[in-house]
Image 1 (cartoon, rainbow, N blue to C red):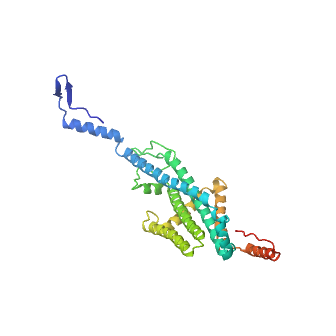
Image 2: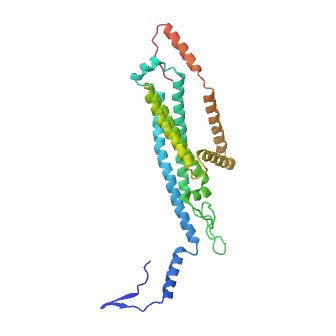
Image 3: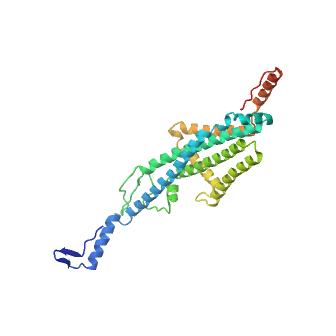
Length: 315
């Protein structure tokens, strides 16, 4: 804003203009500020909301981009331990019984399941962050109140009334996008931890010929996992730690599914598939089935007695 100058330019130089009274100058400045603000506080709340919305956009982008990078890495390395080892390790595995060991097969399958879990969590993080970014880009206040308390403007997505004040961007998200905030945060951290634990198992398997080094590498990665959880619990912004964040995310997910089960069968299908995932995962770890080990041993004995060459397989 360029205020009127108190000096006039003349051909022969600068000549003083008629002096304005102090009251007139203050009146002009006050009128200008009120016109820029749009009233006594209505525009101020809109400005705060726009700042929090921009901060929220940056927050979800900072989750979406690393999640996409991590998901691409997981997709590439997911089935790495299901392939046969190189020739230099195959003979050593046969001599030490690694190819038929139940513990090593459990390790390889656990690695695969952890990578599947991390891939699923990061995929959902990317999708939900993208969706909430679209909502934030089109969000306007649902309800504006003038001095008389009458509604003056409506928008697409409903937010709090203009009288509410938010202390921070996190407070803004907790009041308007808590499900998206808690889900993206919990899924991103959980996927990252799952990937780190899977990588620890892969290090143990890749260096299995060197016991001390494999244990050292695995413990190094598990230290990172434990340190990450320790820092998260000690410096929790909301919910009081990682466990409470997971509980709140499950509670919000249950409310979300219950609120939308009448809109179609997808909510019911999501609930059923999630329950089946947990049930079969627990059954698989509590009572693993190793029947195919016995069948393979019988086949190996029959071929050895018949004098035929037996080719080592990895399962």
